[in-house]
Image (cartoon, rainbow, N blue to C red; front, side, top):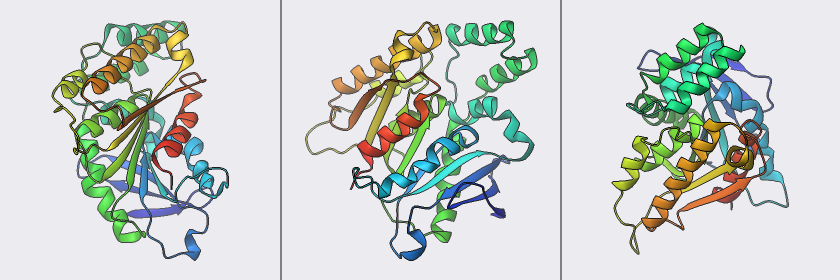
Length: 289
């Protein structure tokens, strides 16, 4: 890892790394209060969509010092895009966070077309957004996190052997759900905020159907899913479709006997404001002392 810099966020170090795939990523590592005065090993919580999420999630590391909460100490690792690609994060994330072969729903096509027609997207941006959705590689990005980035962080930080977490929101939440369904090491907790299951024919349903029945004595890593009220009751069709699909996923998971391992919370937020609230809900639910 080269190009190590200190970012403007407190207790945060920024560096850039080129993956075996050839893609370059920016990584923010945020350490908790008192980290420099301790020798304790800590779990890592990985957060995707760093160009958007780091400013909203990294400051919540102070919740570890809140006497009214029971959030256990952790180190946050936030991953985004670096250099000139940072400006294109909104469609590059489609490549990295959406599982390979995931269908693009009619609702998504209509949403992108509407954004173009209203000027929220240029034609070039709309074309780039859909082009990345047509060639998705969440499997490659997941391998980067687990096989490349995690071992490097183990060599430079005081990292515990267990207790690591993965959090994502929207398409990041879809990525987390995909990683959970694959029971991906080294993660033992997964936080999926409004997972972007945009298509009724999503392969997520096939992966859930393929899960074995969860009997007594079996083990599954903890998954926490959040949805927002305005996604379910608001007037934006794509969010209502995603919410319906996520509720369908939850029903299927309950039928598999995973009620204890899969928790869920409804937040009083919109899709945009729900990111920070979803991350805090994940911390309080899955990462307590």
